Image 1 (tube, rainbow, N blue to C red):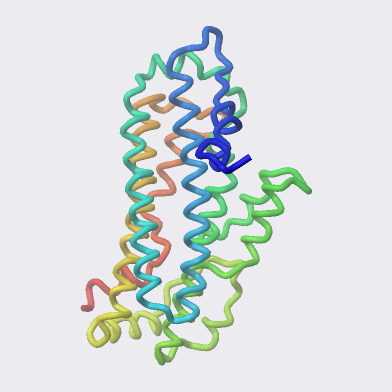
Image 2 (image 1 turned 45 degrees about the horizontal axis):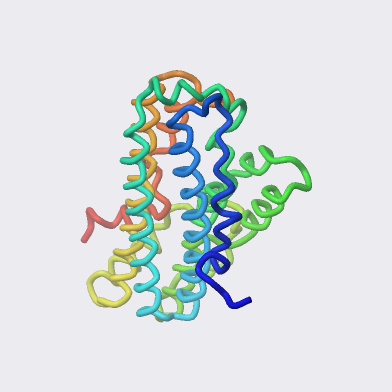
Amino acid sequence: MPVSYASYLKLDELLSLQQPRSAGPEHDEMLFIVIHQVYELWFKEMLHELGYLDTLLRDNETPRALHTLKRILTVLKVMVAQIDVLETMTPLEFLSFRDRLESGSGFQSFQFRELEFVLGTKNPAAIGRYPEGSEPRRRLEARFRQPTLWDAFLAYLAKNKYAVPASLLRRDVTRSPEPSREVQGILITVYRTNRGVSSVCERLVDLDEGVMEWRYRHVKMVQRTIGTKLGTGGTAGAEYLATTLNNPAFPDLWAIRTEL
């Protein structure tokens, strides 16, 4: 049988995955399921693109890296815009099916934890939240041992003949990157003398800002939906989410702003 639109996209399987658990079911549970399933697909695409970006940076492919960063930033804009759709659901509409989530929580999204690891938030406690031997745990353990996007960027700077300290190029990648005065000095030179490399720097700042914007919008959406109540699964809800704000993945790129 020739490939069709439906068979290529596996629409029969895809459209069978939205299964509300509430009685009736409650009207807004379908929206809640679709939005979160779409988020997981975007997380998958983001991981796919960030892996490609890592390779491009290490290969010193500046034009392709910029193109890929543009795509990643466009996906981020769509992810933020999806919150507008979710916010059309009122607190009472959410409460009509909330108890059907039981212990389920977005806090358990292992793909989002993978994104955090790729972007440099290496929190080993995140791994322990998944059962030994499970696929999510295996994936997170692998990501935990892999270099971050910042490590790829440092390799990119070195490929462009900048004197990145060898200790940073060989650092322990299971730890989150820390600010470096040496790197900040290099970045100031880059901004003043190298338009191509500085363009990559600016797109990374856009990426960092985009992730922080998504986190902020997510916090406000949770606050307007459940206020200060505990999140599903007993998580701290908006109170926990607020602690994740204003933690840049690439602090050196922000630190140099006062010195340019």
